[in-house]
Length: 304
Image 1 (cartoon, rainbow, N blue to C red):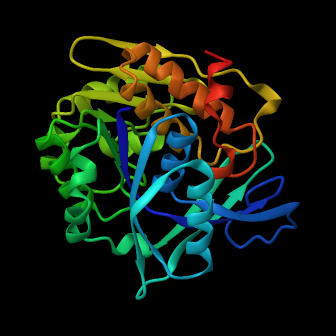
Image 2 (cartoon, one colour):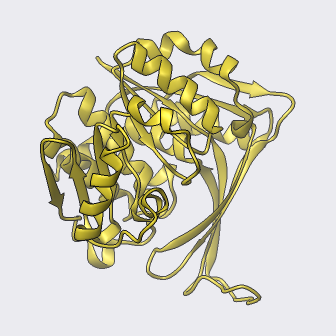
C-alpha cells in the first residue's frame, strides 16, 4: 500500500459555540463548548488514516495531558506516530475556536511544541518522507522547516502538497517544490493581493499562482466549490449541497487536503481526486469537532 507522510502541528481544540461570533469588546452567552484533538497537520493525518491510507504523522507534542489526547486519537484512527517527538521542554499547543450558528468559525492557534520543530527533526524522519507516495504539509509549522521537508520530498520524487494555512510570507524558492498548492479563498487572496470570492476571481488568482512555478493550483471556495488549474487545463467543481446538515465547518479544509492526498495514493485522476476530497470535506462538516468529525472510508464510498 502506498503511504502518505504528513508534517504538521497537533494542538488541543477548545471550541465555543454561540449564535454569533462576538465582535471586539463584546461578551456573549454561548451554547456549548468542547475540548478535543486538533491542529491542521494532525487533523489531516487522522482524516487520511480514516479514509483508508497508510499514514505517517511527523510532529512534536508536549509530555502533558493534551499530548496524551493526541496519542489516543492516533491509536483510534490508525495513524503511525512513531515520528512524533515527545518534548520535555515545550507544552502541547492549543487553539481557541469560535463557531456561530451557521457553522462558520474564527480560530486563534498557539502552536506550542509543534511550532518548535527543527530541520534536524525533519532529518530524523527522512526515511519516512522518502518512502511515501505523497507528502503533505502546511504553514502551522515554521516556514523554514516546511521548506526543508518539501526539498527532501521533491528530490526523492514524492508528490508534494502545500496547504498554505495560515497564510504566511514564504520565499519564492518554495513554489517550484510544490506539486499541488491548496489555499482557501482567504489564503489565495493573501498571495495574489486581491479578493478571491468566486469562480472568476479564483481563475484569475490561479493563473497568477501558476506563474510562481507551482504545478497545480486548487483553490477551495467553501460552499462555492473548488477551482483547479494547471498549465494544461482548468475547471470548477461544485461543493456538496448539504444544507442544514452542516453544523461545524472547522477542519473542512483539513479533510479536503487529506482526502485529496488519499486519492493521489490511489492513482485517481484529478477530477476524481477532487470529488473524493470534496466528499471527505463535506462529510466532516456534518459533525461537531475536527479530528473526531473526519469520515470513515465507508461513509465516503457511499457517496462516490
